Image 1 (spheres, rainbow, N blue to C red):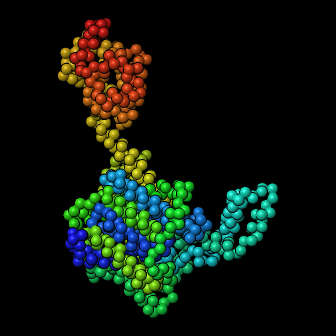
Image 2: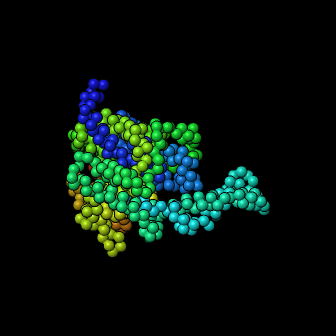
Image 3: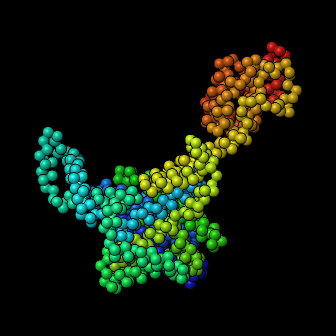
Length: 620
């Protein structure tokens, strides 16, 4: 306990400072996610406290981050869309996904997967981070100019026919589920349709309008209309916020410029009674657990979202452990990756129960904590307590913050989160692959694929596709490099030292082949040409395998094909110095003893030569 409070002054100052820095971002990420500012604040409180207490990086400050919020935003929007646009109805399912993601992180830590996160290819991470920046930047354009599609009556009215169709489909689906749908008689359907109120159609139309204008593509579609309906006050507040965020950094970096912008612009807007749009009201009092996600928990409810939860967990793990590396470099310490994953998982799980959005280790907040004196996990816990104090004491005040101010802060976050290092390196990276007539860099290709697919399609699938492409290209590169050093080509080669006394009279009838290196997917095509290269006079083939340490499944079947071809030609095949792993593989599918009898496998070349002299008698 004494050790725990050994750096109390530094940890207290670091935690308080980090908590203050986290406030505007927590509110902004909550609004951006679609669950409101309180969800961001709750996530920051619980993740910061519990990830610090149980985690493996003493100085790390955790909470909602740009990557986690961007993915959460997609998850939230898709689940709300499947629940008729009703946030309250969808909330238990959303929080269940977040809870599951936290539990997956705990599982990853317990199973020791923390050390493997570092193998995620940089181009995938680079493309993803830049895409996150693009998504945040583009999706905040509409709130920054004060345009909200669901409040544009003319735009919403375009969706009324679609809304009526959707409502009718829902009625038919409900009747089918209740067992009262009769195809010959639609009396009940007509009755229910007649009970619809204009308000129901209007509500559904607003939901459809909001969904249509969401995401990068949706924003770009509605942007021309939004520009014609700019709210100049909201735009002025957003621009003032952006100006202060960047301008105040030139004065000093000791005070967070985002916090200064939040306080100054909000204070001016509220103080002068400007008719701005405030953020959603932040509930006062202590956060209340949402036990519905536990009592209503069932595999059937969560099965459609398992892959999403796993992806969210992996993203949080990568985000957190990258920040842990930054903390290590600053403090000259070494974090425990598996313990850190357990801490992050516990923090995200508890945050989800209280309605918070998921998060991860936050680099900027961690750096602020370290620079302010934080050195132990107490600093992260104090940051969480600081945010809880702000919630309880200043919740009503925070509810007066203009929505445009948070949009402005998020725009600066989107600009800052892009991987400019990776983008600048594009011209310098070697063009190591061909696509048709073009030569391109494989790493640039991966980065651009992930960037484009993440921005305009789906973050989760984009990362998966990026990993698959990166893995395939990596295997090809390693295959090419290994094949250069692995000589399995069916060309004439120099005799080894123990072959110099091989009888000249037998050289036409005995063909000796050396395999130097692994027989794997990268070298099988060359090896399969072996049967076609054997002289017509040869009756026996000796394959020397002492330097073939490894054989994969591709190599195994290539070997089988060659041996079958040789057997059809009535050519004897002798193995010399067959090593343990390749022999095990060949025994599993019957190459030994069906194609190669055990008496045709020799420990060394001398014993093989003795067999040849005894059995190959035509010219000896």
